[in-house]
Figure 1 (tube, rainbow, N blue to C red):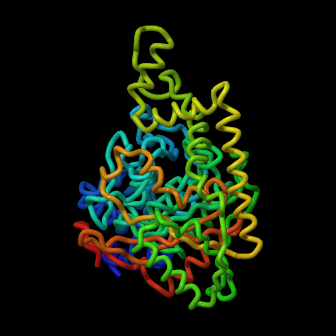
Figure 2: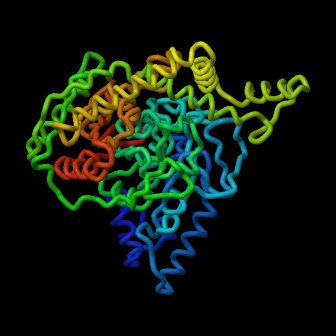
Figure 3: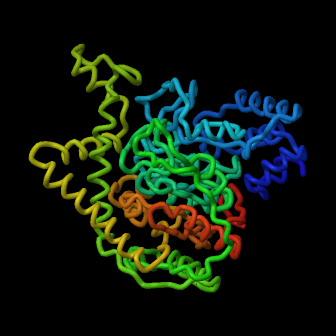
Length: 496
């Protein structure tokens, strides 16, 4: 093996094993990753910041430690990337927004530190929709990442850059954040694995808040086996976050079978809004799971139709509260305005926030305002409970729920930019799980053809609360039987 030349064929585990066994060095792998980023990222725009010098220095120190016989971590020498709403001491964390341009946190998030403690090498921070508000990456104040399968199309959002970085084989894994589907939807559109854990499985301390009751640190990988490894590192209790569950790190299930698993198939996810070709591929994937020994059970999730409006009340209300801190006093570049305090705050927020963030702040402020709080926000919380109840009832008779991740394959950049509602509906199949706080993974399950381009389709597997390992086991077994995630593309967009 010669480092990065074989890298696209390796998962994170085998790559780490290769470094530890001295078949290659951390420096060689990191250097090759940086070279690939330099050569190809100008066309993809996955990265906002590439930490070349720091990554090289860390790789050298890892090689030196290995040469001295010092203990190595489970991710020794493996390069990774972070969404730009995650805190790393001294590294710009701008959340894709002008209002945080140049902000450098004074600490490193615990979930990042756990990766570093296991020997992983951070190579850069990725582009994203501003404050994670979007489904295509186009709301970034800096650049919109592109889909490696077709450079005219989006890799999804809001974790667009982190998704593109893994899909383009720049790094074997990255971290994004999933609030309403912002990791699962991109994973489906770009043909990789994206996992949203049970709410509270991973600490949110060091993740810049959008919707506090919804946000989850969520990884991208090229395989479910890699996902199990990454999750076993970053999950677990954290005293800094009161919403983090007091549980040990995730331990993958050893079984390599889905025999006997009861799979719920919700009719609401196969309604008229689902693209016919996507439906065909997802149904074929479910059929494959049945061939492997699982059984299907028709189920109903009747409140699914209310998920999008419920989400956009709850999430915007929380965003309005969380983003009130960006006022030109504590964070970000300050604009003088008319010279008054209120004028300075107004001018700073006007210049610093983009249109989508302003739209959501206004909506959130409205639903929290006097006279509307009960009619909108409190009612949305009640419907959120009904959506969770739907899932709880379903899981009394099934072990997992299977459905599409996205109603369509990747859409073109600019295609939905002028229609916010159409953009919001991109997450119609991921939002219910977020509202319910349940674990869910998107795994590649096939391809469709659009305008001569071969584009990936994702199968979503949802589990009951804390059944993260079961969800990932089912995804791993499906992958082993299908190999969809091994497909390669050209950066001009022609899948192969």
